[in-house]
Image (cartoon, rainbow, N blue to C red):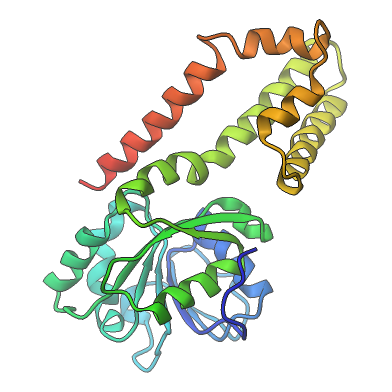
Length: 274
């Protein structure tokens, strides 16, 4: 993990507690989160002393969060921003909504009377739920070093944190790391299915596919070698791995489809900003 400022996590207003919001909340609770409020219509299993607000009118007037985290679907931004405007006058906003730009969110908050709002953008991923997340952030010039440090501290509780200097890079970040766990899960799914097709019992195929993917990921995380070097170490010329890679690495196979897939995800992230 990236080291952030020490100490307990401050009180938050978490707007949206679905897949991503819930993953981050799980990590924050494990790291010692100060009493916070979660605005979500569907969650009812938040442990005390934290509170759930079903709708904006249920938000306590005397609550003073140190940070507002927007984790709703991008399509709900227009609906939710007026609800948190009064809090955004006093606390920075950390948005994890795919595609929504800092400029667009800032303009929307200004339109409902929050001219002093500072919006920082982040893209985490679901391994944040077990403290193994990867989050990349962008802060506009208006953000202070203290606000950046607060975001780093918060997001370091759920994994590694990096920052980009240009907001345009966030679309590629979304496509690679934000959506990336789904690609890995698909790999495990397909390996399991292929094992069954080759005659393995279903339970064993599932076990070895999952363990192989997770073990290889752990080895990659701990190694200083390039992924290509690790791949070559497994691949004996003329062996079984080489036979498989001849298919997977054909020009029209993984090299082309992975690039096209990530390009499609990045394109969709840009579309969501409009």
